[in-house]
Length: 280
Image (tube, rainbow, N blue to C red; front, top):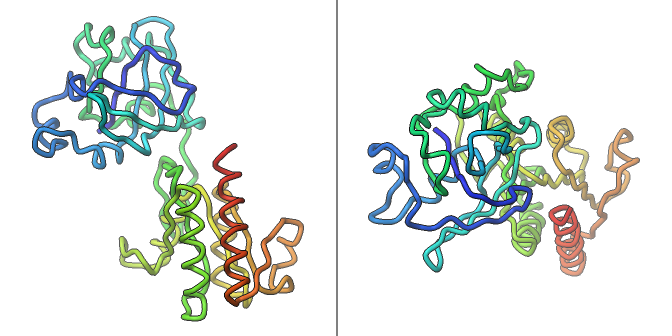
């Protein structure tokens, strides 16, 4: 399934508003039921789906694929914050109209109406079928989702699972909250049978990955390599500069002391760095 949001707006912005009474127009009844909570849309569930952002029209208007990462109801509208996936080439409405049955958009008038629909088809399968959209090369040791889905407000922390680092992790969590993000580490989630798969999945959906090089933990270094390979924003921290691997010493890192004053300063430095990354 995917969200279809059609508005006559500039999709290069990152925030738009959809009239509340236009939610679920051109949506099949069984899908509407699935994504309703009482009389309100289940926005959390809908945000898990990829999104096709379109202007009205069936000609040379440009449409984009991306994700909605925040949605709230207010004043008769649903205000959304979103990110366009720059790895997926923009589409022309003419192309979508030509293949409208595959996109579950069979009614012509739908192309001239501002609305938000949920479509019961796999958006990426349609793109692969008709446009050969790029896919990722898959590893064999762990699993990656075929299509990248970075959560712009997700941060993660890679560090030893030891009690001595709990206070440091609490500081990383608070720094993420200060920057308007949320933070996890793999021992706080259980989505897969193998913890390594949970770690990889968390890194894969994170916008920012904080790597603590303290004590030269080999698992943490392996996770740093995954984060760099996936192109994530990595923030290195350490109590001891000698713990930063030789291959990473050309990168900037945050040094901190493991005491009250030191972790307070670490929180300030991390908050500033996260805010700078989000502000790009």
